[in-house]
Each structure stands twice: as C-alpha cells, then as structure tokens.
Image 1 (cartoon, one colour):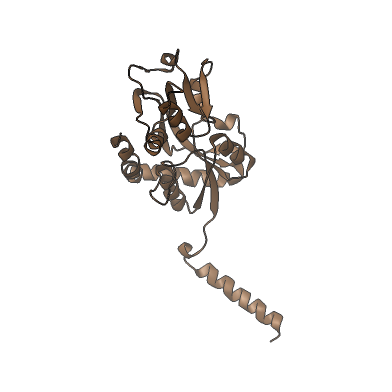
Image 2 (tube, one colour):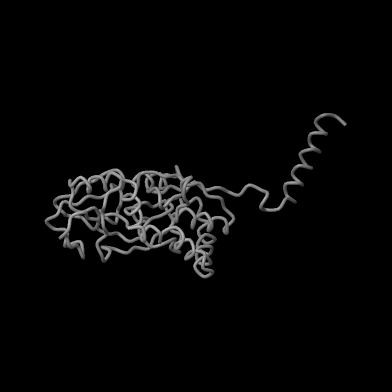
Length: 249
C-alpha cells in the first residue's frame, strides 16, 4: 500500500472514531461573549460571578461553550454589533433598535436594580427627580443610567465602578448611580462606606444578545434559561453568589 493510500485509510479511521466519540469528548462550539462589567458579574480566580455562572450553565445545556470577554460597557455593545465578539452577555431590552446586528435571547438571564449610593447623611432619593440639586456620577456606557439622568445639569462620568465609588468617597459627587451588585462590590473593593438608598430608581430585566450570525442558538439558550428557573438552578446561584453581597453591607 503506497503512502497516500495509507494516509487516506488513517484519516477515514480517525474520522470514524471522532463520530463515535461521546458528545462530552468532542469540542463544543464556543461563543466569545462581551460583557460591560467585572466582578461580581463575572468570575475571578477567587470567586465565581453570578452572571457568568448562569450563562455558562445555560450554554452547557444548549450544547455550547462560553468565553467571557470583559470590556467597557460601550465597547462591549459596539464589538458585539460589529461581530468582533459573538454577542453581549448582559443587557437591558431594546438595544436591537440601535444595534441591528444583535438578536435578543427572549428569556431574562437576570434582573438588574439601578440604585443611588451615598456617603453623606440627609440625602433622600426615591426617584430620579430627587436627584435635582445634587452632583451625580455614573459609569460611561450604562445606557439605563444615562436615560435616567438625561437633562440633569451636574453629571460626572467615569470609566468603571471603582472610580465612581472613589469619587463618592472623596466627596467630589453627592450621589453615585449604578447597578446594585456592581456598586456593592466596588464599595467593598475601594473600602468606601457607601450605602444604598431605597427604593431602586429602576428595575430592569437583563438579556443576552447574540450577533445575528448565531441566531440559530437563540431558541436553545432561551429554553435552557427557562429550565434553570423551573428547576431552581437560577435561584440557587443567586442565593450563593449575589445575596452575600447584600448581607455584607
């Protein structure tokens, strides 16, 4: 048997073995998903992140593997829409109107609460209108917060939640508006004695978005997320990974 015939026989044998291998032994399709945030949304070597762990389990049930790409919030959307990443992992509804290459997975991955953080006593904020007369800070690219603060005359923007909490701790802003869980984690990291004002200024369901070239994965991921709600997996991860941040205040 000549060398080329031997090679063809070897390749046929290898292909047959690959086809017979269990699904768990074969590489799963991997999607690189941008996210405009850091811990506690995403995992670190020290601690798993709530959003990443929920998404990773949903991807596993849908027959996919997940690669998380942390980026600044605005850049995450732009890259996902351009197809540089395969989607955006954690966004409020409606972004497909301005980013037409993104397709929403129509089952929430979670709910986000956007709240006011303060350090000084005597500040009362029950709605966005109560922010009048205060210098307010927020993270660039948090679209929900940008809409809440539209028209506010005294707004300072920063690149991330750590910088936002440091501004608050230094007294350079009166109120920091951001999502509850990332703000609590940033307060812990920066050792700023900030407190959350209730009620939240907004409660928003959050969704995954895929670039339209991956639209075939939308239904399997939605089904996986719904199943995780029914079987208690979502609640277990929430209780294990997010609730302790609230208790640590």
